[in-house]
Image 1 (cartoon, rainbow, N blue to C red):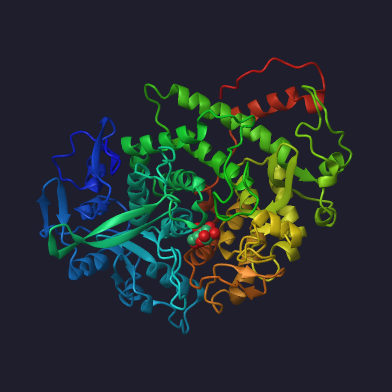
Image 2 (cartoon, protein in one colour; image 1 turned 180 degrees about the horizontal axis):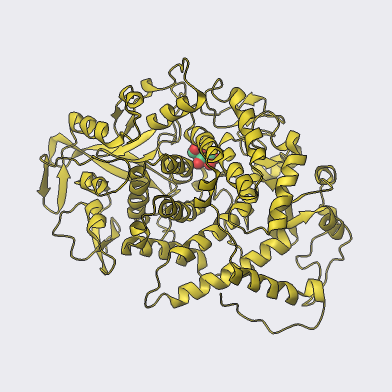
Length: 615
Ligand code: GLC
């Protein structure tokens, strides 16, 4: 295959329907096999995708699109995306069924795949913060040939350099998607899931090197381009970025994991399992799993990644086995296990998944856990233990215990450390990884409560004036210089280096509801409400107490808005948190206790034969 071509999975038998890739998905049935089809690198094109949206049985009904302007051109089914068609289709596409029409009537119409910036930052008058947030969230919706498919990262009219904030980021869309699901607006989520699945198979190269098949993009953009050979017409193209254009060329390891988590939430919330059961979607799940479960040189069950491969997408000393990736990995494995339909040939994958779940669960609970007792144990560690039953397995030198930790660790409470590698424990507290470990039950019940205890005990440090610190503490001085490479954006207590990110409110809410402690989230939401709307929904806040809007923070950052909305919606309806949480099942619990009792750290007995755990 020529380098300028890419391979997409397309179910056999659909080609006669149209050349619209989106329609292929619509018409696929679970037993169809796949045949690679080559398409031009230039893009997934806006073709008859309107049909695609109209098959959904979501609350956003009545969005059929008249395809009178569509025609077959060679192998492509092309629609003239003339402005009035798009406007028409958007009016009918985004209207929710729950009587919010009057708000939407004031919505500015999108231009080139997203909304014009002059539709932004309107005064909210007497509107509640929540109403304002809904308006802003709707204004951030991106359309692809008339169908909503995502939300842009930020819609900041004051920003002089847009960079890639006008794109749909996979991770940023998760709270948007959940807000829409909780509101009963399912189309956008379904479209997002299916269109990003198409991008999974995209040709992706950086300087002639291709990352693994199955990688999901970090972000994508809807581009309007002139139609080949016909200047009077345009077509819309989805243009993904797998990190090959991103600052620092970071790999979006978290994208596929979030995609699986959202897919499961979609099924749970809508009750419509037909999306996850589709052959193409099942193949997509398996491709992500294969990429994550591939054999390598690793000694640990944790996923080995480079720096900046998740929400913290810059050099921050989180290469190796960062907690955020491990929590999302575990969560994605649990969700995939629930969704995979058994079929011939998938036994090995399911076995590998189950074994990894048990090993990962054990590894994190045992070796990442930190509380006062464990610090004291590390403080007295012997080093250079060459043996199978070493207590200090990773050869951690007690001098690594940072001085701040002694004051930070409360008598009651604990947390999972940021990273673990040979002779290295990253003792920083990373919020997302800890919260998602609670949500996914990667942490035990006791550990989950202890993490929340710590957040309460260290409120002034972790929440202060605006929830929630992305990590604690900030790196300063020489440490900042060496570890970030003197990154001027990640100066101490700014951005990823100890800044506060309002989007994390939604994960805090899910975690605290799961543990029966919603008052923690309520307190945080109340605090956010004091400023967030007045401050124009910043991306992040700076300083130790989060008193300033971040130095380079975008305003009207979509996931700050959506994070707040999800928190509000869940606090009003805590039962809905179940769409996102996973409970540990008895198989996993048993396997974990077997491993605990066989752990030499506790028994120091003769080495037992290693057993694979089949769950
Ligand atoms: C920044 C953040 C990243 C986010 C992106 C878009 O790069 O670090 O987590 O996805 O902005 O908002």
